[in-house]
Image 1 (tube, rainbow, N blue to C red):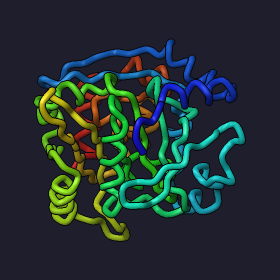
Image 2 (image 1 turned 45 degrees about the horizontal axis):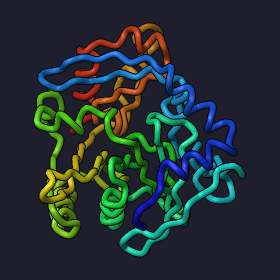
Image 3 (image 1 turned 180 degrees about the horizontal axis):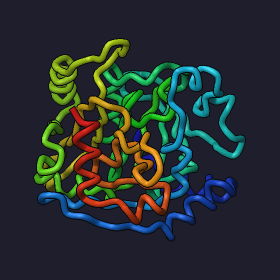
Amino acid sequence: MTNFDVDGFFERQLATWPLARKNFDALKYVRVREFMIGGFPFRVQFNPGRMISTGARMDAATIKVRKCFLCRENTPPEQTPLHVKGITGREYRFLVNPYPIFSRHLTIPAMEHTPQRILERFPDMLGFASDLDGYTIFYNGPKCGATAPDHMHFQVGNRGLMPVEDHLDSLHDVIPSAVIIESGTIGAAEEEFRKLYDSLPVKDGEVEPMMNILAWQKSDGVSTRFIIVVYPRREHRPKCYYADGDSQLLISPGSVDLGGLFIVPRERDFDRLTPENIREILNEVML
């Protein structure tokens, strides 16, 4: 896949899909707050449209009985896919995400219904990062923010919203366990990623280490390099997610949140969230 016209793809979809058009228009009115934690700026976005993701039940019984919304037979008729191949030869579909965080938000599910697993598809992730200039690709592990852990997928958002993209040097002020891989080639990046993957713990009953990943390309005018940020995890959701009454903060961090853009679907949580809350949440969920 080369020279993918993202804007044209979006324009065609929004012209024929009222739900997506309404939800993307609503992004103009989201509220945003910003906190400095160490030297890293955290943005908090009040986005009620994301309740479908943040509030999703993720227990095995629920996943087993619900229809997979990423399988072709269950997607809305208005959601027209673009079929692509990753560099490994595996097939994917590009879909407009109807519940967006970004002004250009895509989901890239695998063609087949197969579990969310990153290791063998990591080269595909970087291939998409190479093809989509100005965009960041992200992966949420099956218990790290993915609302479809039973169907392999990546997501894509236009750059400029996640602070990590411009403040990588101060990321360790707030998430010291994050691992940054910088590489000029996909092969070298994959080699380093496999070393990291093999070094991380795997919980009982799980098949891969808990992690979130962001990836994009960066050019200095002379050369282009891949930037990959891996966030090793130990918990799916923080304690405040399950708390009662005023102690509850309905926040379920995924890759975007760890990239410095905290998504909050309830206004009362948006108004009450503090830098101390953010630090506590990160300390609980990160390895």
